[in-house]
Length: 188
Image (tube, rainbow, N blue to C red; front, side, top):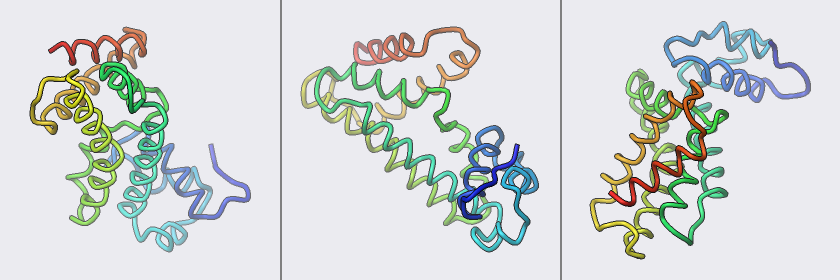
């Protein structure tokens, strides 16, 4: 499938990257697959992004920013912490959500340190920081026992990412599983 039309070369490359990087890791994805999907020639990619890694970083920052917007719309700032956590888990596990664990696995494998820093910074601001905010509010309300907020976020995310493959195989209903995990987590 190719992406053609009135979009600029940069936009077409990012849209193609969404498809290609959404299905494969950074190292498995090929420049030729991105160019074929965008119906563009290599000079366009090198002009806009420098190389495959530059495109990957731009793609990752874009999908992580979209994830942050999704989380800000779906995670309530008031109400029970378990409800906010269930909304968070549902958002990160939805079928059209980026594969956050894969992005985190790819990031240390990027060749330029600044590339990894850019992706991790986008992840921190879009996913990790909002989750820490849920835990801070939960601690303040007494819904969550006081603990290291970073550790709470790490463990909760690990549980979410563990549910992902099960959901992907149709083992459970996403909303019910997210609610179950959030309730168990808050109950400790």
